Image (cartoon, rainbow, N blue to C red; front, side, top):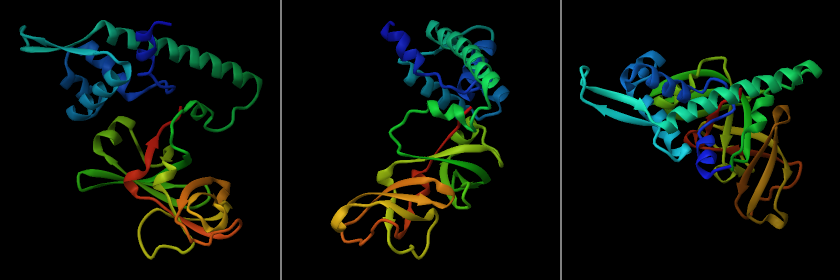
Length: 251
């Protein structure tokens, strides 16, 4: 497969209705980024963020400005932009065909589409959005875990718009293991403190990686400092900053 085709494929995800691809499609239809933003229900800044991200992932410019004309200029898709839309349509059809065939054989496990997610983030936790609150130019998203715990993620308003987040929606909370601090004692205050049972810990009280089993059976990986005294089957507490929690969508 040619290198350029591989790069453009990187701009596409498994979701059949990626908001970024929708915005790209609307730019092609309207010839205007501002009109595409209005039609998609996002801000002009969010629309540009979506187009810039797609271009970065595709390794090619997908939209170019058009100068002059009766309307004073606008925007149009490049050949690479048209190719991304064509590929998105074909992938969506293929994806639906595969899932339909599997569904005919047996019931699909919940969130099966999320199995295609590839990332360096070790922690990938299924959650349900409990609330969204605008704060200091960002959005704080409260996430309920299946076992009863709660996480808070702090993201930009543009990201919340592009993901079309809403209360009650099922999402994935992602967090690097290196961003999770594990302690033997519960922190006195702060969000994102999750209790769990130590499944794996460094030997001899050394610093290193710790695996916790949370309520409901979810697994969480973090790091502990030297001299913590944590051992297998002990109770421990994981803590992460809301800004370190990333929200991802499955199908």
